[in-house]
Image (cartoon, rainbow, N blue to C red):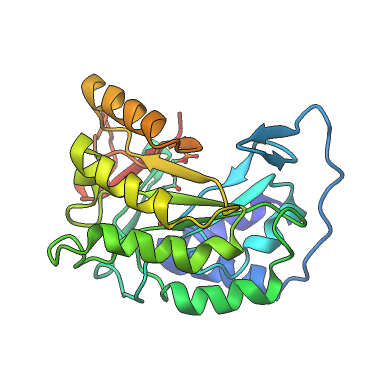
Length: 264
Ligand SMILES: Cc1cc2nc3c(=O)[nH]c(=O)nc-3n(C[C@H](O)[C@H](O)[C@H](O)COP(=O)(O)O)c2cc1C
């Protein structure tokens, strides 16, 4: 069934409900074989061979339920998460808004997820040896109360320890606008401490580590982040998460708090 037919059905539903229904449908579908890779599209990043450069971004499959099936739809990789050490419910609903007139979406999920332990058990059941099968990235974050409890960096270290054996690459996500204090980790001294701890926690032979940043950065921040990544030998940057800016939106939901993703 084409997207043109399914779209009116999905758009008749609350946005988060539609999200969960699409995940449930994917869970029921058999895992299809990967499409034959086109050598023209093969992309090497940090030693990983991506069959093509189009991937499923973090946030759709937060708990790693269907990431391994996405290559059957033509994706070159899928990134699951964001996963936090402990399960947490995220922000109260509603927390996902369609801005239909603007072809945009605002979300403030707040890292709702079932926790890294449960996800690790699930992923281990379908995960092929790293380097074989579909490319799966795992995106890690901090629990909501971590920054206030002085545990921000420890949460990332825990994520590296728990998820590295299951990941083709790990994404250190310090870019969500929906977790208090998280983006403060993009400041130079905080970033140095975080990256030092994260890189030290990766065992020899562990997966490449990518850093995911916010788009709402001043030029000086960009320079600091680039310098920190070079100093700590971060393997790649993911640019970027959703924005907290609201460029000329018309929808009634334009004033909702959260990260905005508008079609360019
Ligand atoms: C509904 C929704 C939920 C998201 N959740 C996460 C998340 O949990 N972790 C994360 O790193 N990024 C999350 N993102 C950001 C996306 O992974 C992606 O970085 C962003 O949409 C920009 O990429 P794009 O330009 O390809 O859309 C979310 C985005 C949306 C729209």
